[in-house]
Image (cartoon, rainbow, N blue to C red; front, side, top):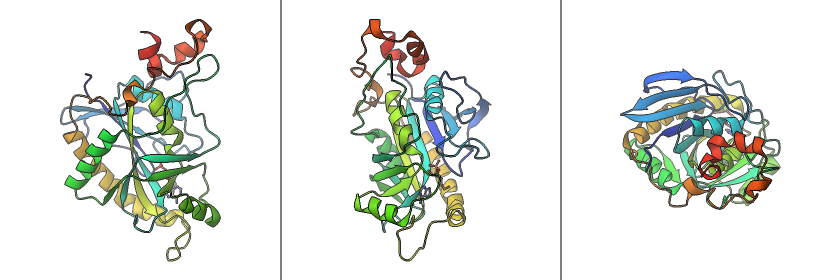
Length: 291
Ligand SMILES: CSC[C@H]1O[C@H](OP(=O)(O)O)[C@H](O)[C@@H]1O
Ligand SMILES: Nc1ncnc2[nH]cnc12
């Protein structure tokens, strides 16, 4: 079994990870283009941690402009085994009040303008997304939240919208009718690409607002969000530090097979594969392409 290397993608309001011993920014090249930023390498209690600010330092990339493929590729190149995403989101349920951390386990992808797969013409693969989140990683996050006494709910469906505008009232109501719990703009295609790269993935959806549907809270606006975001970011740092201290140092085999997702996923015959695409997939799919 490999040793655990914890990856963290920080969302809005989270552009660094304090408390990393020996921390340094290091830029990794990716054949998939420019990632959002350099990676922040360091250690917590001897555990290697690799951090990436999803929107880049200074918040330079909007959700539609983020190169999700390059981000996942560089994290894979850095050796990450377990990837935790932390994200701001709107609540679609009364009981998920601002400040709550939802450990979501399902996604509905309503994004339209993003590259969603590492595979394609010349190398076709189909991975399962029935269970997009690694339950073991959720167990560790839930335990960490409990230890840190953070308001947390296990499970839930995250609706990923394209943005950057917030949803209309009609959309907000529709997503509630669909049974969604929270809404954000970034966890898709991130979760899909993490699965293709055989990473265990989990998402901490940190509620900042009630989107637009709630009769007592009016419409969502960025000023309100920013206020809650600051508290959430401080709590997220505590959660992540606790997770890093307590997660097992040996990477545990994923009970839903995230780390073997490509075993039977590739359909293209070896002789029909595009050598250029095969070369680009050295980090993401090297385990199965070069065996
Ligand atoms: C800060 S409001 C909207 C913005 O925040 C979320 O970003 P992230 O998921 O990276 O925390 C949301 O998806 C939007 O991009
Ligand atoms: N209401 C909302 N909709 C989409 N993304 C968000 N991020 C934070 N709040 C959000």
